[in-house]
Image 1 (cartoon, rainbow, N blue to C red):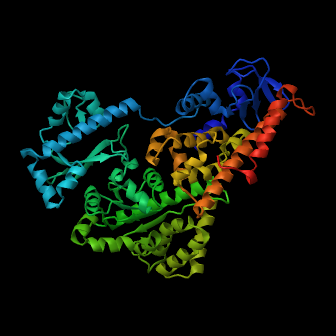
Image 2: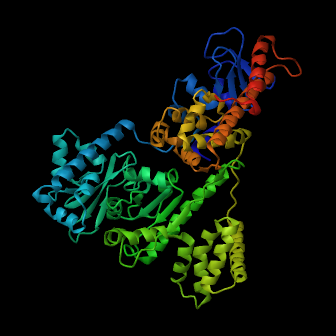
Image 3: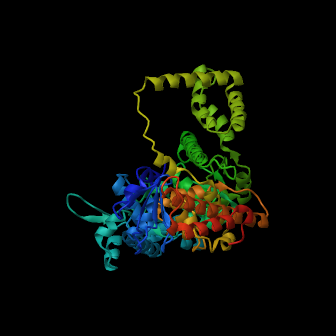
Length: 603
């Protein structure tokens, strides 16, 4: 469950609304004078079954708990999220202060400009020599804003003070350190070739610094700050966005120089993980852009063992992400994109940078011929152990089988056979071995301390289900922005889910997906990733338009039927609806007939 689902599960619409208005029990629901306009006859209905409210008077608005708080408190979604999180005791992750983020972006940009200018001075001569030795051209140096940090230890600090930045801000940005005992401040990066690190919008959020002598560590990065987290950052993503999206393929390398060399030679769908295995946060960013990841990792950087561990870690992240997404949608309309994770096996002794500069055509062939991850891992992991003894074979199975088990049944059978062949046993023997492991694990779990299952309420079940129709509509609109004209006059309140409503409303005023990421509250980013991961059925344009119009009509029809239920449950059981709502009921019935899917018209 998302944090929003956790909050919804702890809310009851009656409890949310009752502090604002005196509710009176009426049938299976509640009625009151609308708190949002003056009226004599109650037209405000609360439906506990649907965890919703609706005004049938002048407001003509409705929704769930979030919608009510947003309207009652005049809040946006993010503000309502914080308020309801406090009320329900749900802990929200701390997010950056926008004003503080702007300051940190500005001070990092100022530092990048300073490093860039210092590179051109006599002091930066050694750094320029290193750049020349790596054959970077001037265009790449300028594009990636490479620079040099003075060895003096106070050059940047003095520069920032001259430009009215406070030392405290430089410390918070990770650019300056302060000695706890003496209170003396000093530049964090000293005597290093500097690589500014950008977020996907092009803001400078941190730096990587490479030593130009035998100093260790060879590379250091900005420590984690409110705007920079290495696990959540992909180097060069801001430059690679359009081409990754266009090709639906992302090539992931390890180092700054690898990414720069690739872009310099026209391979602009390349990003760098900055020496780490792919993290869940990095995968989330790439899944909105690509269906295929090709890992072109340098086997000499940290040794073959570390490389294989990195690949195993990346696979687990991908599969875990896919399982979570499959669980969120059971619709026949949609199926989850399976991420195609591959490995480009580089020649021994050549990292991507060296290979591209030596023979770009060979780089292209290796990337094009990248092997599916398990086809690469099975023989390579098998080579790490002594297969002449049973213990060695079981060690290979321990590493590989959990990766195979995460696959669909048909793929699982194929790779199980490949694993059996690699360790020299029959498929039946492999299955028996895996079965024994499972039995052992079950016994261990039974011996473990019992933990009672979490309480699940009707409210939680009613509010946290994924709405396949709503999600498919949004996936279609996000994937094909030209279709937005079909939904220009579509009322956002027809979306039952407040998350979907927020995405729809914001997307209708955006031109690019990057703008949408910026415009929605950060708490909705996982949901946005979920929506952009839905695989759409292939249809001709006119079929797509017709399907979208029909689905919009279904939402509209459902909305009016719920309106009808809200009125009916608010009256005495077994009696006709109140006369004062008779006209409204007639209107709703007419709207239901008009919005039947078979008679849907273009909005």
